[in-house]
Length: 384
Image (tube, rainbow, N blue to C red):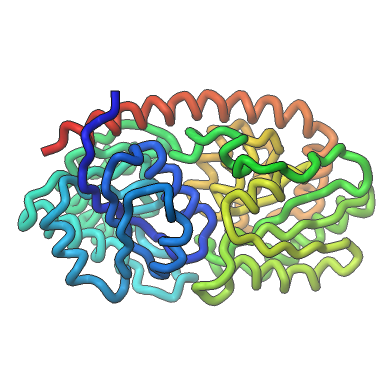
């Protein structure tokens, strides 16, 4: 039975050319239902309109320029929904922004909606953290105490909520609800790698790490590790930029610079414009080496094993959830390049068994994500 149509203001970091964020937006609107009227924010409204065209009843407002309209929409809506992503967090120094800017912005929106518009608020499958300072914890509690329905995507988020007196429902990342065919866009995918030499390695890098002082050392040691792998088992690297544009040091720029550190390895650049582009590239490779959470999530759904470059708490938690801790490294601290190279080699050799185990974990998380959405649809239908 189709739930009644609602007017939903759906907020997130859309229009920043971040494939993971755009995949979350598509996933949430699909799962919540095409019968609703959505008002979505975007830093590039035309980009987002094109992405969602003809599939959803949607209006797109400019995140930076339409703030008065956002307030009007909050007064008119049936529900305010934040979907997925690290919503309640302090920013890393590497972003160049005030540590509390996201917390303060979310607090203003939530408080207006709760106290002035008097509309129900939900945060679904979100990440909470990092929040390390006393001020950050106060702001986080002020936000979350006004939310009517809160589900978090991992145990770390739930534990942080509990530590500030908030009790959420444990969910998982929303993208786990998507099947492989949908990820690939319903079109013919590139051939799956067969493991013959050279081994195809999809590589993703993200500049915004917890400890920016370790960034250059990390790149040097990763390059050393990959050259070690190449000397023992020839590889070719395939750039997987999950964000190209919008900010300085985007993934495409970082990957292009990194290619100069490994001149002995064939480095193939790819221009990706959609989640399906990224999924098809991952699907065509033997292994993934990645920082970005949603690249790793997609790989797990597609049956491609990942070596996890854990740059923050959410990615460390994901590695644990998928059983990938033996094939992960914390890139905020110095690490042994030879050890990482040996473990990437081990992953290549064991890729079939590791992929099968990761796919099993991913399927279990997918079942949980779909159950979460069943509950979310019921909540949205009943919210007043």
